[in-house]
Length: 199
Image (tube, rainbow, N blue to C red; front, side):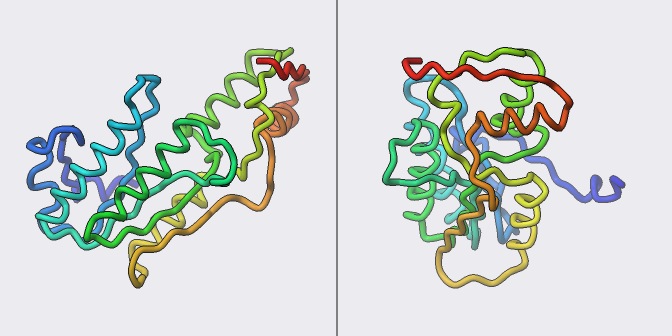
């Protein structure tokens, strides 16, 4: 059902170019911030912060009331990957603005289009015997993309006081290796994982 399609106004812009975003927040109360660099460029963390600053600066000038941000779930006491650190830093940067920030922190999102899930699917579908580096045994709390969408959509109509952070990991704690094995079982594939701790 695409009846809603004609009610959607499309605004093309580059979050690193303030001029291209002007007018984006006019007559808008809430914006979703789903922006995150997945590049391997050395300065992607800096670009993430720059994007958050440009977004919130313009949003404040154009009187946006709330930003709903999908960030990353992590144990801050452990050594985080650069990308996960960047998601945490982006949330912190958004909260420096004068706009209300509602942050949902999620781990691996299970569903089509999720980069982590697509990686798990591609590895499992293509490689019968995997020589696994240490990251394959990193613990996560995967969550269904349907649950993520429920949180994002429901929060749009809810009232919150001040800024809020919600950790929305799923109930199961699994490593990437566990998820590869589970995916293989569901697909009826036989897969062997060989841990190589020095990788």
